[in-house]
Length: 426
Ligand code: MN
Image (tube, helix red, strand yellow):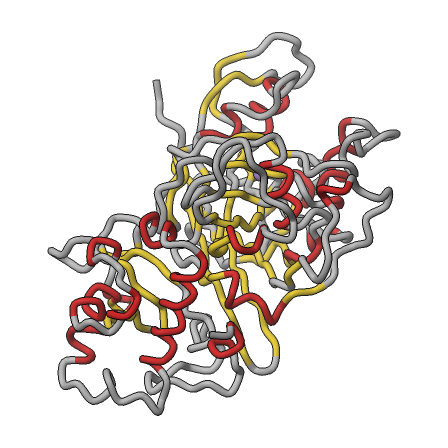
């Protein structure tokens, strides 16, 4: 079975899919949804609907794949992802067949819109995965250079940056699904012209525009994954907002890197778009000079063309688009990130999450954080309402969107949004 079968631009579904929908039959992303009074289930997005994989399983539509029912009636996609690349690919193919206009299996059933398809507007989307580990990389050269310039004007990129994909191990307990409200964090900050810290709410709350990939079960501990094998261990991708408190970060990050300035929350989009669905959008990345060590070399197109957008929606004013960027701007690709992550023999697990780092382009309109967009608050953004923003205010909702588009096919990720609540009083 070829991936191309499911990605063919000429495929049509018997379910009406509006022009410009994120979820045509060529996409088929996986997620976990909840109907009232039902156990959470795995589903696939198609147009404005969700195909209920548990109901399909009960009718034996995926019988040949020998998957246990519990995989589909589940709080998370972890067990589904643990089936591995070939079985999940076969499952997506089986779903594609069921939804094609020429397939009669499901479309002629009287109960089709009652049992097998649910309007997305009527269900609650839950966290798609229960991540066991989370890494955040720092793979955009424009972002690393921008941040470097603010702190070291003469020497923005540190000597290791072009030799390895810099990253750190983050906190997975506080990763939440889109729509979850985020409480403004508190911690130690050093006020202007002071040397000692105070305990305060953050005054520099920021977003980071990132994408993240989610892995299949890897190899045994002690072994490593090569750049050539990497795709076999990547299930799919989500949009990732790595909320950051810049003033807390500035005081705490030396010498071991970010800690409480990041761990209070990160938000992800609910639909996991498979790497297979993104195949048609592969592209070349920037040429890497100096040459990288052998284990980081790769062949073929490893970057992906994914449009990215960030919007800020104040509580009582118009929404403003504050950034337009693209995933293809990354200097280090997923294959290199995964090869580097495992080169020391570190094992990876099903449903681990690996975020890209903030994705900025060359010019200001494509910067992926307020830190860069307002240059540390010195050049505020003017909102549609005329108000200024240096960082994120209470009751602002930050929305990120992502989509690839080519040959009349749009592979969308939906969105990740999060509203900021005021810090708790104490
Ligand atoms: Mn980050």
